[in-house]
Amino acid sequence: MKTKKTSRQDDRPAILFFCQDWLASSDLMSCSLAAQGLWIKMLCWMAQSPRKGYLLTSAGNKMDSKTITKLCGEDAGVIDALIGELVAAGVPSVSEGIVYCRRMKKEADLTMNRVQAGRLGMEKRWHNKRRDKKNNKQITGSADSGITTLGLVTSSFDVESSFDSLWQQYPKKDGRIEALRHFRASVKTPEDFALIELALVNYKVLIEADRVERKFIKNGSTWFYGWRDWITPPVDIKPTAPRMFPCRVCGKESPNLSPVKGVGMCCYLDKGKQGEIAKLQGEGA
Image (tube, rainbow, N blue to C red; front, side, top):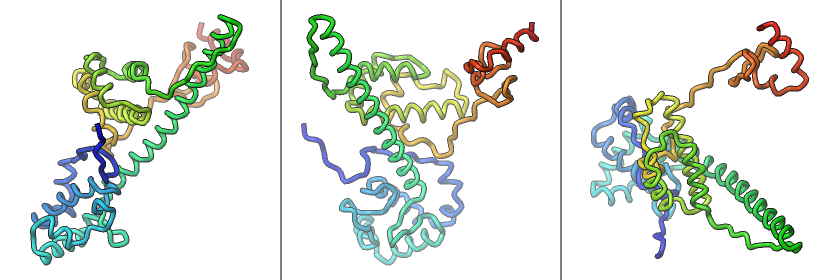
């Protein structure tokens, strides 16, 4: 089966659209209804652009008012006036004559940076896994026959173990069979796995930031069906800071306390501070 070629920067069929942000945008609301309608068309073209967020043709060239006029079926004078209205209101930005959406560009840059970081981490993980597998085969071959037998280490994607590692992290483990089916259909390479890991991190950040009740968390089967919607996080969501506790030994604040009351893990694992910890336990007794 041939893969359909596309000039888009990514293959996501949809974009995040925040209704409240649209309605609350004073610069956009100051424009005419016709200009707002043109802007939503421009956003759709930018989402399909070879450089996401920029108003470019599929060939990567600047989309000028003449091209927009043909696509909209409107007079050139009207299109020029509407674009001028949007630019004057500060809705889009212009760089080297190319119109772009600041928010979409920011989200695309963030996604690409995270994908690159995830790909590097995944490559390192798979390198270590192949190395360990190779070492295990060497040990097994020596123990069985005294001759080292090296098996072929393939770079194929291990779907089952990769799904299990993600499933252990998902906060609501309902619908495992359906979730695995969706995982098999959408995650076929280490690059896909890096993306779904990123999506899960973004979803868990949302749950933590909004303090979402368990009954409103998506079932595993539902989330794994639409996990690509979470590759790009809502820009307004920020993870909440962990609660910090002062350590009674060193005085530093730490998010983790040890089994000894008031003692942080930073000191609990330090052999040089065991005497002070014992003294504190004696005082507590």
